[in-house]
Amino acid sequence: MKFVVDGMHGKVAKWLRLLGFDVFYSATISDEELIDVTQKNRAILITSDEELYYKAIKLNLQAFLLKVKRKKLLLLNEILKTLNISYDELNIGSRCIICNTQLVKIEKEKVVNILPKKVIEKNSEFWYCEKCNKYYWYGSHWKNIEKELKQILNYVNR
Image 1: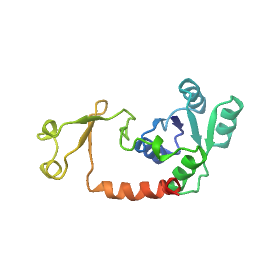
Image 2: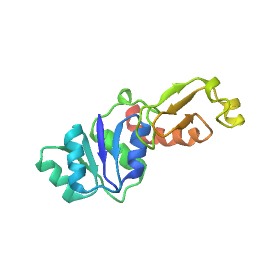
Image 3: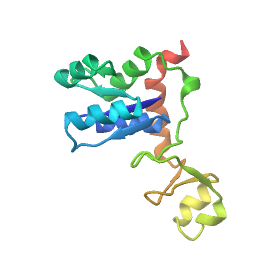
Image 4: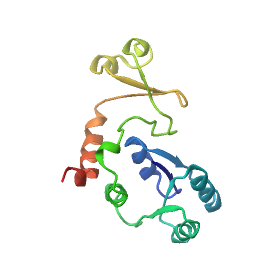
């Protein structure tokens, strides 16, 4: 499942990527370009812009209208629930949250001289983004991410 997220929802785009979805996001492109990217990629457009939403619907594109004043966790839960996305469809931690590229698992030996010593000592699994040259691991920040993921995915466990 692919998504195109408008410029108002960078955090939503980041979290959808964290959940493993292919997400196009740009804060600087026009509505017409968003429509074009949505069409070309057969994606679901996510926006809070009613005019953009109705434009997409008129073109028979799949679109999702977000309620602006909701918290990020509620927005994500609403997207997953409305689109009937199950936990099995998620591939958590498989994409770079910055550039959307699929992450590649990398052996610990290859990052020993790259990452801080404490990171190497406390972790055994590492991933790498070949596009933006970023490394990922299950660091202390992951506890906060897991807490938020549980809140987002709460409906899946019912």
